[in-house]
Length: 247
Ligand code: SF4
Ligand code: SF4
Image (cartoon, rainbow, N blue to C red; front, side, top):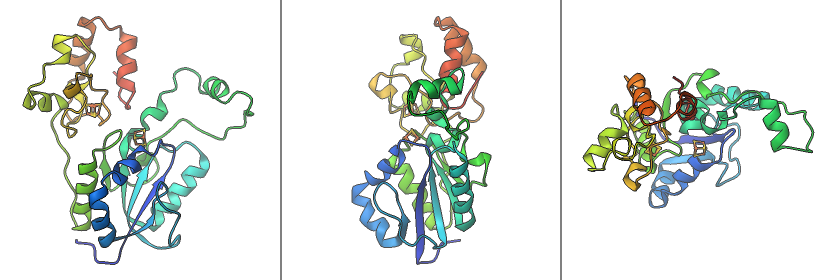
């Protein structure tokens, strides 16, 4: 059902780098039109909170959940939001925040040396571990066009479908040489959801899998190719776990 004005939109941020917010702010020429259609109630990177207690029609969530206070804020947000959309890899899979290898406490001590050790945190979790998510926008960060398209479709009562192909298909369309084949590079394009127009392989850089895993991904075959390219099982696991995938 098409949302009726006035439409309230809010962005909430948890553990993240704010890169997803920045991508929306980068859609400069479209922002005035967006602001004409929706009332932006909160957007941490660009404004202070406006209308803290307003009911929210579209709530965009960035970041993974890593502390009890973040969890409380998320639950409170869910209660006042009609449609909740998880934006970016941090919110969808815990993303790069979940990359701590080995013992977490040891890593915290190393990074925050001398700042005490009473961190009230838990391993980063995706948003849908705690609340119902009505839509997802993948990517680290998401593509600006996909952000606008998703918000625009929601305003009109629908939901923008995402690609069902892997990044490899975009490489074929763009006539990129296959990095896996040519350079034996550990490219994750074969199992990664398309939609970025093969942004990294277009530049000769392996796909890191930031958009998450495509449906029906053939992980076994990719692992076989990686082993044949000389990667160890541990190296393969490290690559796959970056965006929440393990063998
Ligand atoms: S998904 Fe990527 S760009 Fe977005 S907040 Fe997380 S780390 Fe930053
Ligand atoms: S090529 Fe891979 S890592 Fe690069 S933007 Fe696309 S999905 Fe993300």
